[in-house]
Length: 215
Image (cartoon, rainbow, N blue to C red; front, side, top):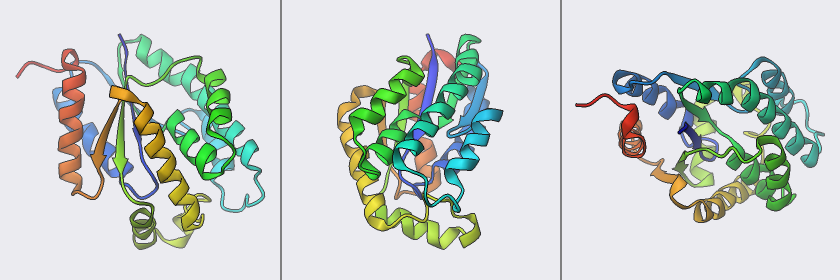
């Protein structure tokens, strides 16, 4: 049995804050090792691809090329980091995975969810997460948070996209969520970070009780 958890959501939803808070709470109660990782990136070559994808200077990056770069980074990350960790019995907590590509490239870039799903299936060979935490937030609120909390120099290429792009991403996520079944747990990202972390922890413990110390 594997313990592969991904965290998804639109830009500005608070994924990084949630994950940072979750790590401390999880490590206090887990009886299996925890690996924290991210996409794009997570291992040396994948991190180099991340630099290309998110560089604000690359305004001419073709949407299909962008989708292929994400899939290439994901394959490298999966084979070299995620799968070995799962084989060793670790719980893997990953910031973004395939759902992000379908939402951002398939729906946001309007190049087709089915095509993006197909190239990612080639990359992951069926290895979907066992659980996904989806942070639900409107596109406008996410952009407002980014503009309030990140300096211009800290904003990546996707942060700088127009609001209609981010609205398509959020709409895409809603479609993904409707199809994901019980894999996905939706968390209201308009709540305080503490409440979000508490809800996420309860959901993880309920899904993987065997990974936690007995109270």
